[in-house]
Amino acid sequence: MERSLTSQQSHAVFPQPTAEEASRQDFVRSLKLHLANKVSTANKLAFEVRAGRDYMAQTGKAATTYQEIRDAMKHEPYFTFWSAMQRNSQEMMWKACQLPVERQLPSLIDSARNSEGAGGTLELNPELETPRYHKAVDIHCMPGGYHTEFADDDVANGAVYDRAVYLYAMGRMGECNSDIGDTTIAYLKEHFPALKPTRILDLGCTVGHSTLPYADAYPEAELHAIDVGAPVLRYAHARAESMGKKVHFRQENAEDMSCYEDESFDLIVSHILVHETSHKAMRNIMRECRRLLKPGGVVIHAETPPYRDLPAYDAFMLDWDTRNNNEPYWGASHEIEPAAIAEETGFDPAKAFEGYQPSAFEAAEAKRARVFQGGDFGGGGAWYVWGAVKD
Amino acid sequence: METIKLQQKARGERPQYLDAEVEKVLSITMALAGEVAVMRERIDSIERLLEKAAVITREDVGNYVPTAKEHAEREAWREGFLDVVLRVVTQEKEALEEMARGMESYDEAVKRVESAD
Image (cartoon, rainbow over all chains, first blue to last red):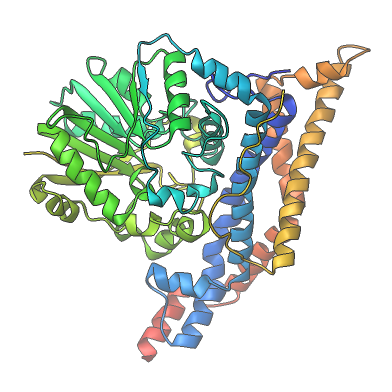
């Protein structure tokens, strides 16, 4: 009764859906595509012909910042209905991904327990305290977040997340969901061609979607990855072993990586981690990166573009997730200025950098509309990267 | 074997966009639309199997794996299905397009407001 998927790469712990479960997931993917391509696009029109004009009539000025546009759109019926549907699509996505995981969880846990093949390791730390910013709300509405455990040696939310990311991105991050890692690597190879790392650390790796590409891009390097969630790490380890990629996973908080020695890494990377932390946490993380990096080492974070680089309307749409998709630090994290945070955390601000890299995923499906439409987090067809080089 | 239940509700307050009742009805309607699509694909599997064999079992249907071509056909069907089910949403979009045709452009309206200040 198992059905293999042609579009997302399977592996030893992949939650194989039945025919019906696959249909349910496919529906969510179609719904998300429909909302992104056919419904969300007219939010701008609703702003221009109705909400924006009402705002002008009431205030005597045009809504020009993303906050003003948000005020103007608050009661715009086309937008509120789209928002309600978008939120529903997110909830339906988690449900559709949970069902096959619930059905086969004991066997997934067994597979994870017996994973081996690539020589990677897994070190869990049950004493580690889950940071407040992950306990307060379940990030992007995934029930239980990255850390909640439902059984002994649980991998459930790793399995749920693996499939949900594929549906959320509507398949546009490739069959291994590796687009952000691939794209960051492309930026590094172009801008730091001399960098030949011997030890790499990936922060907030979850199930390793963005971690594994580094094993191929820098085959001489020892690859380490950390996360705060045990279920995602067990899953990440089993997935990596099954896919033949050697990674050393540890359960750690990137704000305090005292398990690693000073100046022990040449390259520290993170992918869509920043927006899931907090103002204070991000500064702690940068200080720790500075401590861990060797002189000349690089820390790089991949994210969606900062609001200052976007037209106000696009920033408003990208900001939807802050309040509507349980991403409390999303908005503020998009205001980070690399040179400023570098200076605050001991780096030379002149050695901070930022830039854009076109999405590495080049399949025909990636030819998306170059417009941010909420729920389309790589919507510009490019990822924003920022970071700093240690003196 | 006892099923391990995962957490169903995400921690955090759920934003409300519409009247509470309408919100629930929308969620139920979208979930039903999803189940209609699931059922339709099951029928599609049955039809395709029956084209090849006179007798089929429930297991055959549950095991059915669509080919890439069939998968694409189903995707196209779902797109058409959503066009039909969400027709009223598209209708409002068309009304907005109609409104836009009858008025000065938004940029002109902004200019007018700003020059009047």
